[in-house]
Image (tube, rainbow, N blue to C red; front, side, top):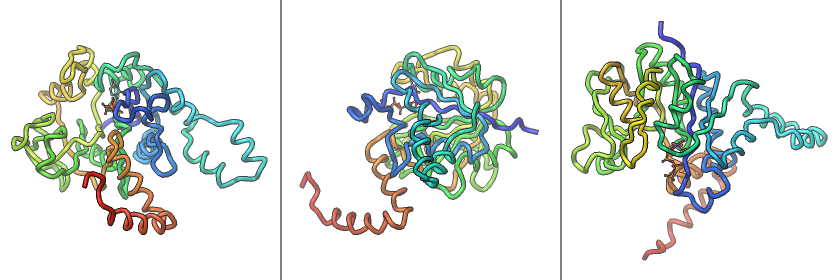
Length: 297
Ligand code: UTP
């Protein structure tokens, strides 16, 4: 019987430089997609995947994330006095249970691997999930739930992957696969970060969702730096692959990388189109926009 996945780490200590000046005082994870901050989508996905406890690895200027998942006492009291029940219910629905979140600080942004290592004491000796909070996934079933369903059969380590056009593989971490395990799952034999054009071992990119065994913390503790002088999670996963089983899951759904502007704007459109009233207004607007000449022309 595989140990259950009860805890998830959400690393939110990055600087978000690609969104400056917006992210000078507001964390990237609090930018909104339609009417919810990015981080809320990721927390909802984790909870739908059965996660009981979320560990946020935060940094300076990120306190507002903690406030977002707390009771907003004055606001809720005012809503109650004014009988705004629907608004109150919405706030309650998105609030985690008391005691089901932890916040720990990464004191300096030394890389994703270092951020995950900062959660080691709270995770302890059990397998756990990692959700990169700048990636949101639009799917029928929570992407993490799909991964947990696979994990219950395979155990080990699981990485969510998604197809990208062949000419885009050099922008992503790409997996190399060996045996097929299930319809959408295969064993991973290698991973390559941003392969040179024409050299990618597949067209499957690593999407920012992982289920990992706790031994990853031992490897991360060596604090070795990799690409960009940062402590990289990929380097430790590659070392762990020598002794442990890693599987890929081609999940049902589509990811939006909200850490870059095009992904962020695309996510706003895609999630906005889910609301029929918004779609009614967006479609004529988009039709009008695509008829306009591009600024560069
Ligand atoms: P990114 O490199 O995409 O995020 O890290 P960033 O540093 O916030 O953004 P830019 O590149 O400056 O615009 C991927 C994820 O890892 C977290 C980030 O918060 C993001 O969720 N991260 C990264 C950390 O928590 N700590 C780090 O040291 C680095």
